[in-house]
Length: 447
Image (cartoon, rainbow, N blue to C red; front, top):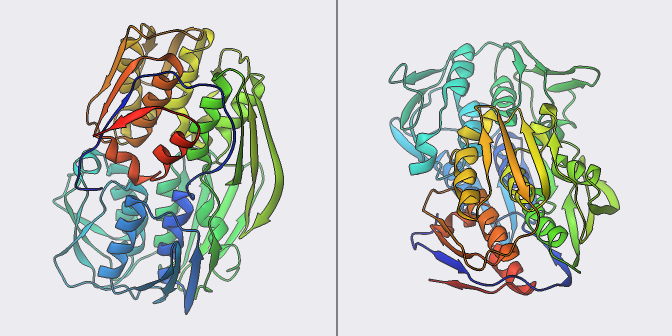
């Protein structure tokens, strides 16, 4: 995260706009490009990489582990793969993951079954608070150890196993845990079987689909992933699409802003990532996907959005994995739509960079929006589009980029005097956010 703190103030409602934009590249795919490229054979190429703080933290960790990563030009890289089991770092050195839970959990997956690894693990203040209990229990099944025992958050020490054995795993809503399991299994003896009970984002599998000697996937009522350990991996070539989670903020702004339209070019439209858009389409939102094509086993295309009268939102529990990053935005929309919206099966939001349920409740309360939450559900009493010129929204430095961005949108749509402290956290995922907002006509101050 940038050393310099950033406070952003929004003072005015945004005016109607009609624009064409490109959003920042997909963070999930960018991070995986480097992680998977590092354990492949030979040289992998990745272009249109998101050069955000989370991705730069990933590159820094891999370089410490002996991986040569060469920047060819802006957003384009060569990754000199070392092959499975070949990463190495001097004993008791430290890896710093910054704010990136994706990099932390995925790289721990790789290192848990890489021989001769004894490394200290640490994140920033926010990441250090997040529970790693499920990950630790999973990697312990492969034989890895974590010190001190019975401690489930960073800082920790990882001691890899010398004799990793494949496991059977039933995966839930967390794509990060599934990814860690796949990456640990690749360098384990025997086979690993993953039964996916709830579909989650599948970028890791898509990267590996061309390695039929190492992974096979059976899609049916239940998705079954079989990983065959100790097989070589072919190098990858990746052209990263735009991030659908970043695009969601501009989509929301357009839908709720009168007489506005927007075209967002070249966005990743992986079916496991578009729950946000599917939910809103069902509520009569004017959203259309065009120019669809498949590249690197990932679907991409343009998103066309127009101002809409949206009905109250009720999400079934099975939408959570495909919508996890966008729930703070959906809460904003629910507040500005007439009627009572209900969001179910969202308990995992409490273990993000911040507790996204309680923090968003605090923000909505500041402009008079009532909500009731339990551990796994929230009901928001929407008022429709309101004029909040006489109200203030204040968000402290809670180190959660999605909450800061969602509050920014709320300020633009309601006119509430909005002060966002610690806005530098947005650079972990969307360094172009403010510049794009400015191009749409948003007025704000930075200091």
